[in-house]
Length: 272
Image 1: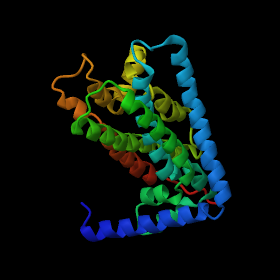
Image 2 (image 1 turned 120 degrees about the vertical axis):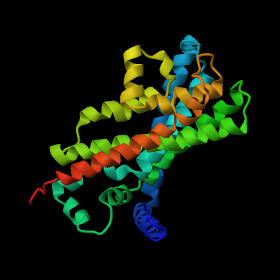
Image 3 (image 1 turned 180 degrees about the horizontal axis):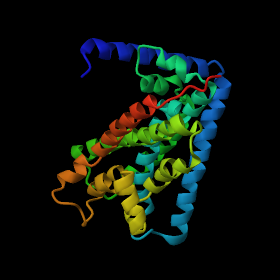
Image 4 (image 1 turned 90 degrees about the vertical axis):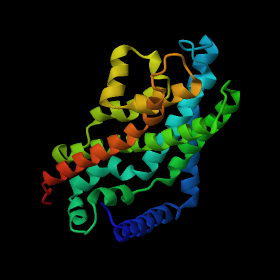
């Protein structure tokens, strides 16, 4: 368990390191604004593809575009948070190839913490903003009786979703301890998980649903909590399962951090 002093120490370091990363990116504000606008534009085009699909077919196995928009907004915001604040894991292979990970090992601080704070991409606010706009558009158009419990469940799902996607980025970084280069194959679960989670999991084939439920628990930040918001008929009993399902995102992140510690023990310096 962390003591209060150690938590304060890590919080101080986190603010300093994130602050340095953000100030570095804001040195070229025109570049930052253009990158943010580009990120917003690309994700907006992505949602236009979803809109075109529903404009042509009307619904997707009984799901309307406003309902899918809720899934889309929640997953987009969650992934934007993970990609923005855990970008260091996505580019971790650069540290391995350059031998710079050795410097992190010499510091009296968790290496996972240092990698997470190494690069905070402010431009990911573009995806976050686009997801928030879609979510804000969907909520008033949904025939849902909103309660405080449902609002808190959506917020908790976003938080746990960010933890889950961070965990996927950690796994991608852990592989680099053995392969030096991150494997593109893992993008099936990272980017594929984002694409899959933007639609209700019930529309997919059984083997896809099983993979994104038991291997990568996308279902726990997708249909299980949001199905309760929509009050679908095929809900689990007791319904408390739907409220606790997003917690698997936090559990998944903690499990991947244990894998990180294992990979760290097998790390061999490049020697260059």
